[in-house]
Length: 329
Image (cartoon, rainbow, N blue to C red; front, top):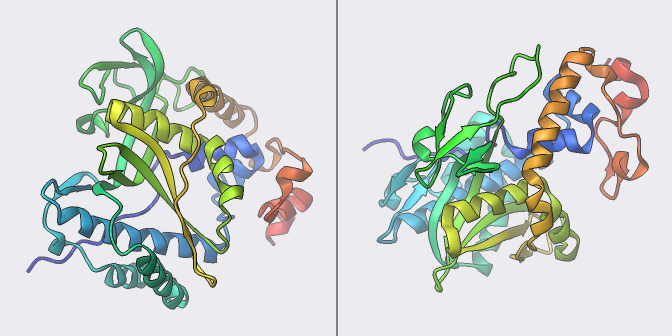
């Protein structure tokens, strides 16, 4: 019998977490993406990854049991037996990535989740589904356009690319002479944790969040304004048309008192309308900084108390902004 599948629940290659950190603070972006520092607390990052692996396998199994099957990554499946059991999957993930010290906690979190929601809330359409979008013109309209699955790995210097609906996108390339990416298409990738079709036929993108404390009222507006969720809404409308129902959170508390909440993320039409322009400006600002300030320790710092020291504590890069490179010694 062939080896069972361990689903890749990692981040996408050019996802929102990359450019989003630049919006938050250019210096933070430089720490993470130019100096290659890991500034997310290792324990929280590991538990989140483990939770995503567990959820991916459970929903893939549910989806593959249905007559319509399920898309997992870039492949369609209709046999649940090909996937590892969720607990087996997370143990195997830990064997490669570490995190065994969190295993009991995350397995218990999963058991509590299944106690609350033992059945899928609808038909699983896709799990960990990769989406590529590109800034450009389609049908004489400029914006962020979803690329057809056949062209997801297209040459960023190509003159055109196939759109999800079969049309043609003319990419608008980066215009920053001297930068190595000048002339290359501006791409944003997203990985959809979960896509669900409910009983009415409406399709929703779900995003899993594993948190030490689930606070719905403190979460939904913050996620609504987040650029990654704007991308979800833009992509969802192109992927599913009038059947698209919006974006939902799957908030899972990873400690007592165990809690799960599934709020809808509010729509932000004004913010979404300006998203493509904002992404265009950010990518050009980033490229210019690459050229003008090759010393990444000197990149602009936000230097504002509510950003540098927020409700969850200090930014992980704060001491480096205090003391520079000496803070790493």
